Length: 249
Length: 291
Image (cartoon, rainbow over all chains, first blue to last red; front, side, top):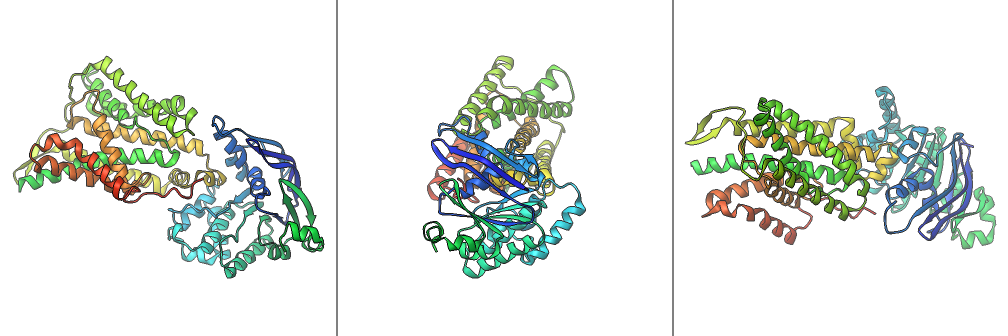
């Protein structure tokens, strides 16, 4: 297993967002996490990439109640649930966050450079940049543009490109198609498939179940902080209850 | 004619000083959301350090300046570590802590140097005359050094890896974290740069002004007004806002009857006007994206 989550629970004050959740991703897979709003998909990605622990640390003395994080996350054979968020990317795990969140007032190129912040070797950075530009030619054309002025689709490409600049082994993408026009959505999905074919393992959170199930090798269905089903798209779609209640199809 | 030259000289110099102060203040606000009321108190402490070095230790003012910048930057980092960092996530508490810090510095200076007006000799003597107006070489030097410092800061922010980390953290510290940027460390370093800028400003301004323990108050108000005018967190806004206010102040001082007494009201009037008409300032950062 490249990524293994065991018995992971997360509370935000009294709300339990993840409930003894276990799951895993094998090297080379394209896995999706689907489920209704508030199921805990984003929280799971944030917990894996260390952001929940970071939030816990900075809100330690706040009056809003404590964040509790239990269970283990293992990546590439190493426990990472105790490691600060900014050191996790070094190990080859990165999150492309919800709502894209480019550094809006910086140029496209600076955004990409921030993605390879930890890399020391200039040649390696240039090589990564070349690969990202090959995958997303539009970013090359706009490299000196302020990223806040890009369209939503371009910003999504930038967010994925920025994540790829760190040369991840596992790329987690949170809701890449939200707020995009249908034609851009399919383009984004196509790019994600291309990334997967390059040998990068992808863990994808997405609302657009019907499209996602066509690309993935395996899927997890989340509800109320628990995995309630797992399988290929076809298997999951055969279950009538699952389809109607959780997938909205 | 000499009036115009006077206004230009005075506006350029005070504008540069306000710009340096406001940029430093905006920088740490942008990166760590710290409203550092003690910012200009550090500037005052630097000025006193130079006085101490030149008058009590008989050192050349340049050494005093170097020493002051180093010492005050260290003081800033220590204050950050002890007073600000533990409560960093609580903006209100930080605000109060920095007010307390500023008051403490003021009282320490009163105890050490009493409240009398003191002065430090110019680095360069003499003056030249443009259109009948005396311009001291020291004024020219202060203005040029201020521009150099700003250029240096621009290079640091736009051309170095630390600059990239600072800008990324200022934009979105959670995502910066994801990229492997240690935002706590970046905040600490930014605090050092910010206080260092305040100290440098104190160092270049001290030959042109008189020292007294309340000398941090007027620049503080001007700096706040600059930041409100330029937009909180925007360095470009701080830069332009500083010169606008510098010239506005000079205009009032030289043109209005009894203008020198109205000096303090310029900043406050501008602040009120901006807050009424355009609360986000000239280049305000919108905070809607923040959680």
